[in-house]
Image: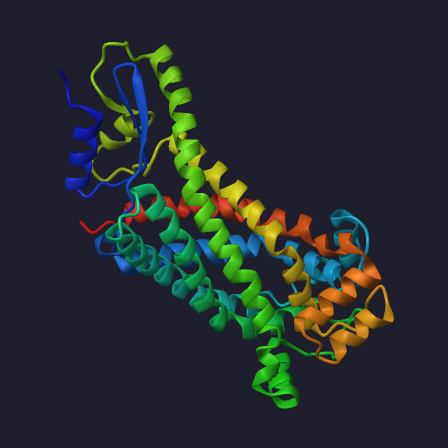
Length: 376
């Protein structure tokens, strides 16, 4: 009899190779996944690869953020496509990247803070929950939920000033813009001079009420869905692999692409996981991001209006509130009363168009770079 699935997990764990795998034992298959802990990682390699990914993805998806800001501040109406075409006709292609560089200046340090806090918090909370008798999978979900919240809170304190400046630049030149800025630096110094440090942290409360629940919902849901989708996909993976090349009496071994990648020649690129694991990760990430976006969209709408101080609104009341520095509750009440409940979904499509691809590519890079950043 060959090594069992449990033996495979023990061998991989001892070797420091703790990745997601679909293991098969006779006719039975199971989803096995162990998290790589922070102490096992090369911190520079992990943070540099994660930050590079974040910068690249945000550059690619940045126009969606501009479109969302225009929709949520009532500067533009219509479908996402119509709003995008309107921006292009007025400002050209540069209009879709307004505020990009100042935004990235905040993304780089904020993402490093986010990843570090996420890993440390998840690990500590998971261990504490396990010490209190919480089952392994539930401890992972609790650690992921609270770890995501802590990481987002820390990162939001770093990136809020550049978010405020970027959003002011996004709507510059429109009927909603209260001030005209020559550049990102000019916008930064003008806000500091006119509004003080509080101006750079305008909408911080709303930003926290968006980012913290979003991150907590995403990571908590992702940890749960990864477990359940993993078990579902395992049956499909085992059936496909058995039909293709694996006899029913074969000994337990990883199903999918793991064998081929682990036997690669020295120095050659080795994929950190196979196609079935990638399917589990990406589907769990997309569903989690969509749910998180839906839960937090109303507050994101309010945050955008507070931070841009847009003069526009379907009603005069909406513009007046933004200009007078009204709070979250006043904005929500005004939107529901004067614009209707459905207006709380404004910008949701653009958010999903950003968070969806970002979550899929981001989670594959996240899971992959964790494995490839294991200390040798």
